Amino acid sequence: MSKLLLNLRRVPDDERDEICALLDQHGIPHYQTEPSVWGVSAGGIWLSDDQDWERARPLLADYQRR
Image (cartoon, rainbow, N blue to C red):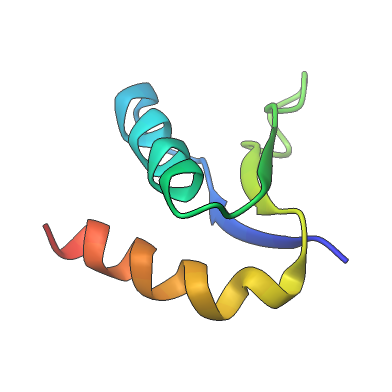
C-alpha cells in the first residue's frame, strides 16, 4: 500500500527534484501526484510500498537538516 512521504505544498521544484533523486539513489520506489485543479490538494511524493517508510523517513529528515 502507498504512503505519503511529503506534501508538496510550498515545496519548490528544485527541492522536490532533489528528494526524488535521493529516493532514486537509494532504490526507494515512489511517485508523485499533481496538485488538484481547485487547489484542494497540493500534490505529494508517495512511497509505492509503505514498508519503505522506515528507510525513507531518515533520508528525508537528514535532507531537511542540511
